[in-house]
Length: 227
Length: 66
Image (cartoon, rainbow over all chains, first blue to last red; front, side, top):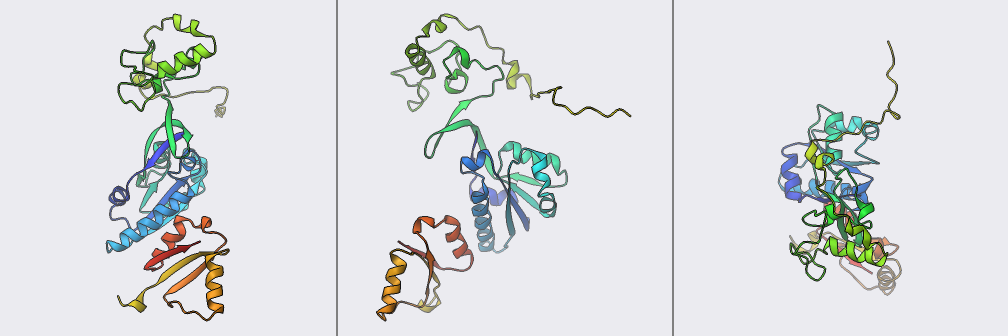
């Protein structure tokens, strides 16, 4: 899932500025399950902003609504009237949700209520950890299902480095050394032979280094009607 | 703010605190009129939103008992 954290109430207040009619828009997907921007969080943020602006002497009319997915325009169409009626939309979606609203409603001022952090999973109640860096050329098949791009601090392809100490990373002892994890897993599965293949430099063009990415699936596109 | 201006919302569990308040009432015991009791099926049901709504509606304090 995409994991995000809420901005502070002070920052949200700054972002909505002097707007009187504020719509807080939650998202029912990733940020719901990481407890950052679901319907419950949207209601809490709206109530908090109502009280905070009232205490500041200029009470804003803050309402909230949550859609199943902010990152698809079809779901945003369901709340189009509410969005258009708002002076400012405070999106509790990830950065994609914020931009989906901005793209779909050109006249709407939209601001983010979350800091989008990473793609990861909950490792225990209340803890989320990064697992994927969306590098665009997955190599998990060579590393026993443990990603050295996302989980090694240096994204090494042929690790570990000299900073690996007792299974911990030199960058932060709280970070397990990804290459130690890879070695341990391949060892337990009897696949250490995979480590004998030295990986050449990675082609980062499929990652962000090639600029903004786009996927075109001709098999899924709707046929263009001929005039 | 004088004592009687206070407005306290008390979220009470049906199975203990609310029952205790009920019993206290049956025994003609007095408690301050500033306290308004709201019955919950369990205080585990108490959501932060309920607390925020109480404050937003003008409560000076929220008491939870369970």
